[in-house]
Amino acid sequence: MINNATAPYAALLLRLSLGAMFIAHGLLKLLVFTPAGTAGFFGSLGLPGWFAYLAILAELGGGALLIIGYRTQWVALALTPILLGAIVFVHGANGWAFSAEGGGWEYPAFLLAASLVQALLGDGAFSFRDLVSGKSAQRAALRQS
Image (cartoon, rainbow, N blue to C red; front, side, top):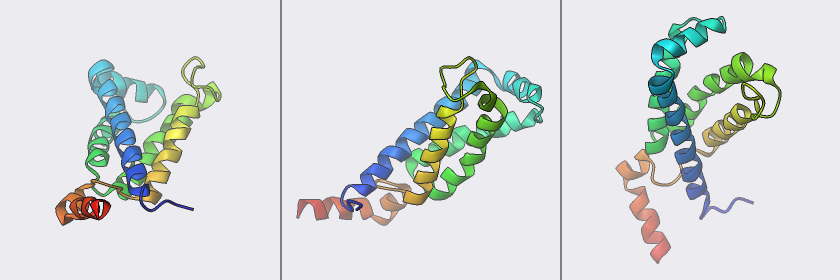
């Protein structure tokens, strides 16, 4: 049974966590590996180098959209190809454990599952839609009564 009183906050926590993770990975590609270095890595995998720029943009933009709760279901679904690509092209051959050299596929698989759960759950509490419509204020008023 789903607890309808706490489910919006569970979705919020998942949304914030996923958003922060995507932003962190986007910043890693942007600031540490650099866009050119990331493009070179994508090329070494047999992918077009320009996919790296799309991945950086998707991770940073998608992460930000998740954090504010804008179109959460669609954003979470749109980010799943990045996680599938990480499994298939980068981590899949390294085995299950992410502690394996080169990182296994357990972590991106978990993030993929979490993104799909987020897509099923929706925005959760304190989303962009809630703030614009005033639902967060309504929810707070209901809790106090």
